[in-house]
Image 1 (tube, rainbow, N blue to C red):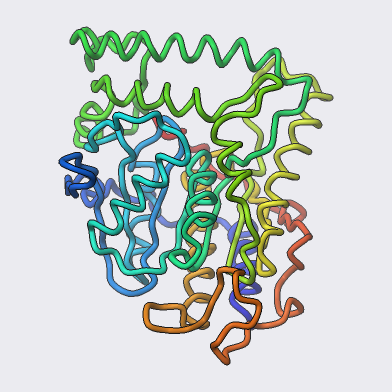
Image 2: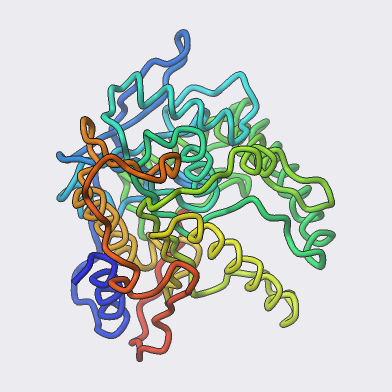
Length: 387
C-alpha cells in the first residue's frame, strides 16, 4: 500500500470515528527564543526539535504566530526534525528594513536556513499566506526543497470580480485599524488589559500561553509587518499584487516532487455573503488549490471536512498524516543530502535508478480532488481559532 493511499485511509478514519484523546497541552518548545544572525546583524528566531531527515520547516500565515502549530509540533518531531520560525517583525525576529514582499520573505528564510546550518533538501509546510511563500521558495530554490504540504494556501490568482469592490473596503479598513494598533503599541498604550480591539486571546489559553502571546501582540513591529505583508499580497482591484507578480515570474513545474494541498471543508465567509458569491469564491479557492497540486505529477488535492481555514487547529491529524506521507515519500526516494534523486523538474532523466510508484497506486490522480465529506462524520467539538 502506497503512502498516499495510507493518507487517504487515515483521513477517512479521522472523520468517521470519534477521538477520545485529550487536547494537547501547551508545548514549551514553541516558547523558546533562539536567535540566528543573518545579513549584517539582523536576527531571526527559529526553534528546532526532533531528529531525522528531511527537516520539516513550518511557515505560518499572515498575522499568525508559532502557537498555530501547537497541535503539530510533538507528533511531527516524533518522526523527523521540525523547525519553526518567525518572519521578520513577528515573534522574536527583528523587523526587516525591506518591504514584506514574498520575494524578500523567501530571501530571509533562505539566509536563515543557511546561517542555521539546516541540511537540505527540506520539506516545507505552509499555511495560508505561508503557503504562497512556501511555493515561491520552492520555485526559487528547487534543489533545496524535497516536498511540500500546503494548508489552505494562498496563491497567485486574482479574486473573482464580484468580490473586488467589497473586499477593497474591508481591506482598507483592516489596514487602517492595524496601523492604529501599531501606533498604540509604539506609544505604549497597547496593553494586555487594554487591547483596543487589536487582539483577543481565547479563554482556554493557559497563563503561560497568555504571557507568551503578550510578547507578540504588544510589539509595534508585528503590526507593521502585517501591514506590509497585506499591502504586497492582497489585490482587490484590477492591479496584480506584488506577491502575485513575483510568483508568476518564478513559477515552474515541480516535476515529481511529493506535494499535498489541503483545503478547508468549512467556509468562514462574512455573514452578508450571497449564495452566488459563495459559489464563485468556492470555485476560485478550489481551482487555485487544484492548480497548485497539478504542478507536480505527485500532487494531491484534498478537502478536509469539519475544518475551517486553520486546518492544523481543527483537524491536526489530517495535517500530521499529510506531513508523514510526504516525509515517507522523500525518504523512500532517498532524497537526502548526498543522494542524486532529482525532484526539481529541471532534469527529465534523474540520475537515481529509484522509480516512484505509478499514479495507480495513489488514491487519486493529480488532477482530481478528494473529499471525505461523503463519509458519515460524527460532530466534532468546536475549536477556537488561533488568537
